[in-house]
Length: 231
Ligand code: IPE
Ligand code: IPE
Ligand code: MG
Image 1 (tube, protein in one colour):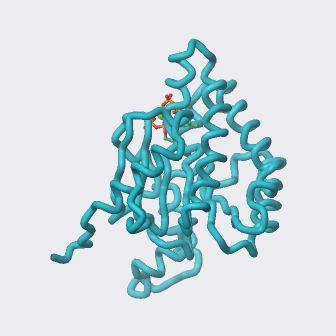
Image 2: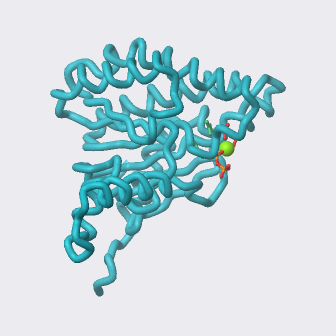
Image 3: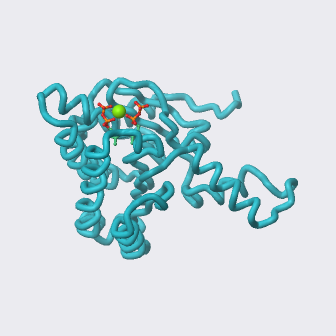
């Protein structure tokens, strides 16, 4: 590991490959999600220990409702279980927030999201942001609706003012997107916020993602030359 590496302020992680991890072991896809949830807990702690300010994990997309009902239900159950002990993980260091449209989630889950957000709001070491029923296009459409409802004059809509209506309001733009599982796409994750992100695609399946993989992605990020359109 390079001790002088430049750290991203905000990392986005697409937790992909749970199903293939399970399939390789002849296990049900659900077993992959259980293992994926463990990798997520570990990775969140690692990010905090490494001094990352903000990390957003893509847990469930607006498109993932297309999956079999049983799989969706077991993923929702895992969220509930995670939220039950999230306060312990957060301690007095991690502030947990959620992005995405909570509308279609169960009332029980919505209440847990609200409670965890409120209880950890004062923590300052790291923001752990979890994307549940999140879609980048949906985020943009909901922001546009809020602006329209406020009756804002067209000329007063700027990139900054628009950003402040997105679910990620107040968070820095995402600097680094990590996607394991070998797929090289964004799948509707943070499409506005990642306009100038660096992408690191990795072949590892998410349940096998650990410190070695996180360090490799951070080292790769540190070697990139970001120009933002300049020279
Ligand atoms: C990511 O793993 C978990 C979610 C999208 C909820 P997948 O379930 O997509 O795993 P693969 O891509 O089928 O291997
Ligand atoms: C992206 O993974 C969504 C999450 C990881 C939550 P998918 O497995 O749903 O993405 P596609 O279908 O391969 O694009
Ligand atoms: Mg997938």
